Length: 151
Image 1: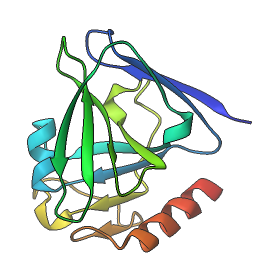
Image 2: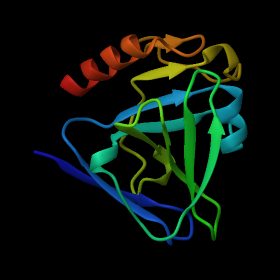
Image 3: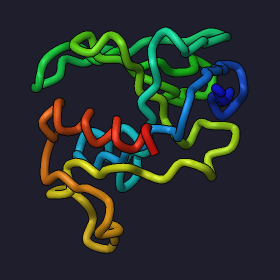
Image 4: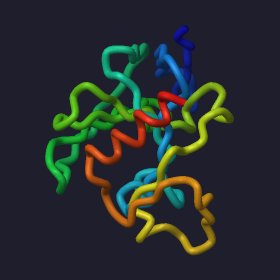
């Protein structure tokens, strides 16, 4: 049975909801772009089916060309500037939701960490969680995600 998840920006103007079977597919990215865009040590992100995600409220889009291909379209609240989600044109079936924007962000635990070559030295990653020094091979990454989804 699918579980409903909800979340939104800091001020509550831009909201979202999605339903998903199985555990949340949460990963952490330690690349410099994610560090800069979150003003933190890494980005805590959820893989969500684009078709399952519904946004309500106003948003603005900031687009960036990715070195690995495609254009990433970042959706922000125009009032509080929170980045809620992004989607890459190279992977139209999935949207990446910022895990910290969930109404209850306590549940997800990451199934993987990427760009660990850029992670801060004080961050300790559970040795049972797969890590990638840079961007993982997409097929390998999705295989790990599917294993997580299966439980």
